[in-house]
Length: 88
Image 1: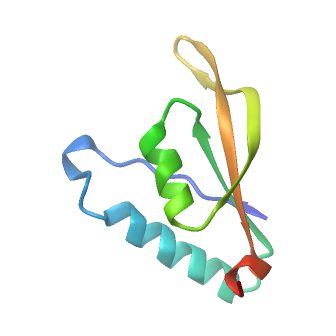
Image 2: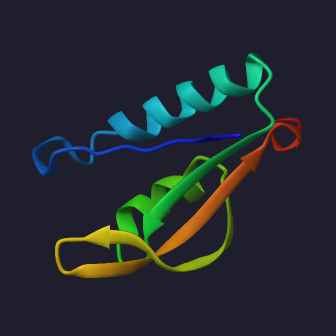
């Protein structure tokens, strides 16, 4: 199991950079034998959640107060993709 994280400056958004990167990392991970790949995103971070869904990750639920911020804690959306999902 591995977790995939990403951060992109605002000025680089809407160019498909992260979509291509996540796709390449996902393909490499499963080609080398990984079973499960996860993405955690703050529930309010809709662009990040949309990216996970575009990349074929499945929303599995909300982890309460999982992400620590300077203001306290935020809930996180958990997305996952399994090696068997690649075959679907």
